[in-house]
Amino acid sequence: MRFTNSTKTNTIGSILLLIGFGLLSSSCTNSSGSVAPRETALQLPVFTATKISATTYQEFSATLEGTEVIEIRPQVNGYLDQILTDEGAYVKKGQTLFVIDDHIYREQLNNAEAALATAKANLANATIEVSRLTPLVRNNVVSETKLQTAKAAHEAAAAAVAQAEAQVASASINLSYTRIKAPVDGFIGRIPFKKGSVVGVSTPDPLTVISDVDHVYAYFSFSETDFLRFSAQFSGKTLEEKIAQIPPVELVLADNSIYSEKGKVQVATGQFNATGSISLRAKFPNTSRLLRSGITGKVRIPKTLESTLAIPQASTFELQDKVLVFALDDNNIARSVPVRVAGNYGNFYLVDNGVKSGQKIVYAGFDRLRDGTVIQPELISMDSLLRSN
Image (cartoon, rainbow, N blue to C red; front, side, top):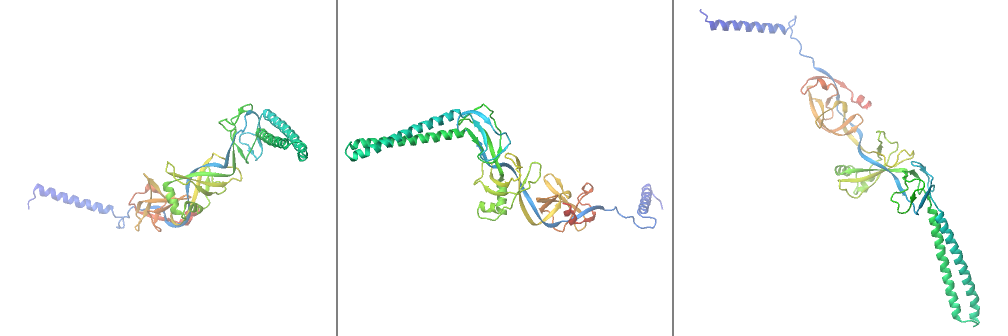
């Protein structure tokens, strides 16, 4: 049989191909002739998503004010003679804060008292004259006209006494206004005036401001969305009835610490403002007087969720604006799944969509994990994760 060059080339190629298969088969077997194992699956910690009862919070930025913030203004004009308090001092109701030079007002009172004494003397003379003329008229010694004239003079003298008494009272009030006293217990604000300054009823700035901080109001706002959620969350036909159902609220201070005493939401404005929000306030006791007017914080309104899925924040990652986890299917294949966060519970997210109760979630090791990766799960107790929260 003759072989052409083409036939020889095909024959040689077939032989080389068989040799290659033989070498490949040899490389895939060990000395005992068995097939080598596949690459080992990733061993990663996994937990089972579990429903729990938890309390989450809605936080709203707030500004604090004393329950009474009172401007202290002078009621009379004059030189500021004494300043008997200092900025930031705590004062009691009735305590004297400022003294205005009272010389003018003391002289006005002296003049009013002198005028009153004169009026009383005139009244006494008029009374005597009426008493003298009455029996004379009865005995027809003098005419009835003289008696009537004397009685009119008596009435005028009595009116003059009343007028003088009013002037004394007015002068006394003006004199008392020269000593400006605290209308309530509270803390003194800024004092923009110095001793010797001219102050009066037309002075645009108050002498100071007193804040009664035995209790404080924390003012905060609901957006329209927040308001609709609030309306659905609490029972009641009116806004006031719904507010009455709100449990005691907490105050988060500027350093993120929680104020020791809880407050109560009491009142809301009747309508939304131009920015689309409605204002509310919560009242907090301030026994320690730690809280002052003007400081800021956050009001936390609690919301109890009876049965919600808890996912450790450490087991999540973010992609654009989504929060995702790696969930396992029945074949332990990891798939990234977006979840919807309903609130925070310590180091956990409370989720209401994306995963189901009983589903296994990868806890850590995302740097080695891709969609579709088969893993060997190392189960972590959910109880242990919750205890460490």
